[in-house]
Image 1 (tube, rainbow, N blue to C red):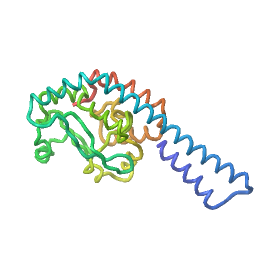
Image 2 (cartoon, rainbow, N blue to C red):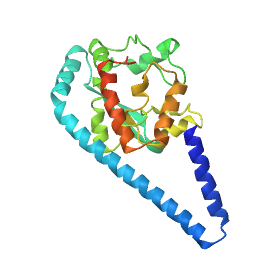
Image 3 (cartoon, rainbow, N blue to C red):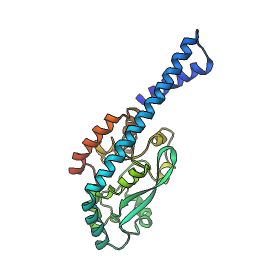
Image 4 (cartoon, rainbow, N blue to C red):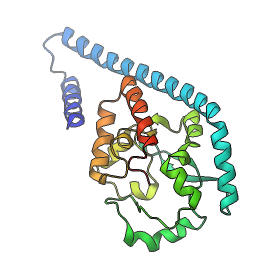
Length: 242
């Protein structure tokens, strides 16, 4: 609801500016100043977010390198196939990029997905199955602890993703989005986000989108910090993860 109110205010402001309904020049100057300040605020926010993303991702890659090395060995030794899984995802404003994860499924997972669609436990365009037979034994553990997502720190360093933001969808899911759901693509996708610290898979897709849009409307440097701290217990207790 809040993002709709903000959009309405912005549209009203631009309508007044376009129609030049000003009684004097000071009104026009005041509006121009407000627009300039808004642009500067967004640029500063973007710079702070990028600084936070790059510095934290670099430190985490360094500190977690032993864990990531062990995970890579376990993935390689316990099932045939590559260590990493790269998948095309949709980023900000519909741009495509390759999202990296530790492989947690057998190599024929995508081919088997069609036959498992009847067991889908999620609504909307996403697929979720608690006891997915395509997941390997090691994959089940690293997914539960979100270790499979750690290679996405590389995506953060590259600028494809942020530490905090809506989860990046696959193109097939985006093709089924309605107009409001497409608003999820108005910011850089993240490794964690408001949805991840509010129940993850234990919510329907409508609520998922609502939380993502709420994050976008209230996006700030300090909100990102809060979500990062809330992510720690969410991961440790595996809330809604499977």
